[in-house]
Length: 235
Image 1 (tube, helix red, strand yellow):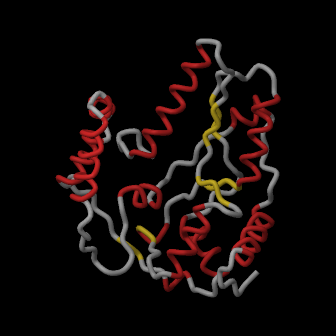
Image 2 (image 1 turned 60 degrees about the vertical axis):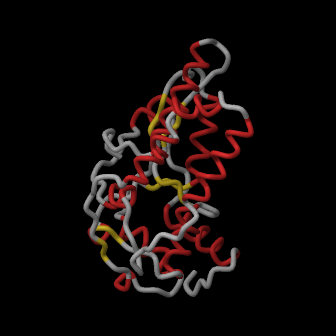
């Protein structure tokens, strides 16, 4: 995603990697960072969550899902982890990892939809225009900032508990949402992606090559959907 998009999940990953490498610099741990894209396969949230959205009428595609889905099967991620743990001389390095095929989000979604007996043509196209954050979103961001968290930690526990209860109560009222599928900023950025990460460094230094063929990966994934109780009609 673009670096100027300060999404909490992306910021958390960046901060975790920064802290890990700081520990490595102090000699406390050897660290290698692997940077996959959309990790799919059995038990993946990108599969189960998508199936839930399709069945619940909440699935949609921003700009018809034409953007690039930088997907990587979980077995290929595990393969990369093994290489990072065993190839000598790679401590302190970071590697992008991916696959040879880069489907569109429409193609990725169609795999799951077809398995559930649904047509990709029935999935609505969503529009998304970024708007300034609401007051609630601004307050949430302020509350989650590091400086505020440190200040809260310095307060007596009864006061902290009271503030937490008041905050929970203030957010307890249901928020009206339009019916049907909705797109948020993260979904829009993903579905409009055009960049394909270059994982040549992982190939050259780690000897990484994807080991899970795409069709076999989908066969196993759809088999898991059936095992997990989803109404799979096509295997």
